[in-house]
View 1 (cartoon, helix red, strand yellow):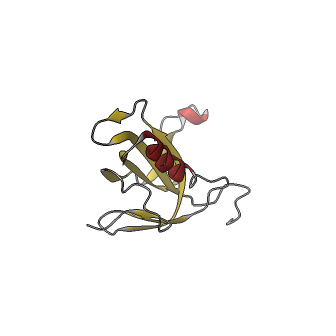
View 2: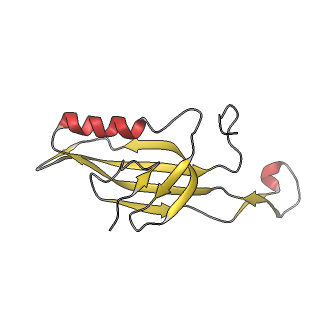
Amino acid sequence: MMASTFKGLDLFGSGPHRFRMLRRGQLVVSEFALGMLSPGSLYLGLVEEMVEIRGRLAASSESALWTLRDAVLAQVLHPPSPGTLVDHSGRSYADMSFVRFEHGDRTDRGRAVSIEYTALFVDFREYPQGSADA
């Protein structure tokens, strides 16, 4: 099995993790929600590709765990800076922006110190205003 990476960095390899592609397809909104009185739905276009990673960061000490968290958070940039995301099976997702990192509410201690996390990556169809890559 190969390492999963973002921009060539092994941010999540310290512990177990899994990739999940989020919803795909058309964004559909009811006409009623848009203030129309008629029943029906409108499609607004394809949703952006989103990949979620859930896992655990693991280290030998509390301070080493904070170092891992800081390294991950350093990649959540404003404005977003796209890069290639590669999962542990070698599948590549081009032009992904790291947009959110949430870690768990408790640190588990045992042979290793670890914390759960969720990371979200988006392939923006149009980059947010102010992006250097826009």
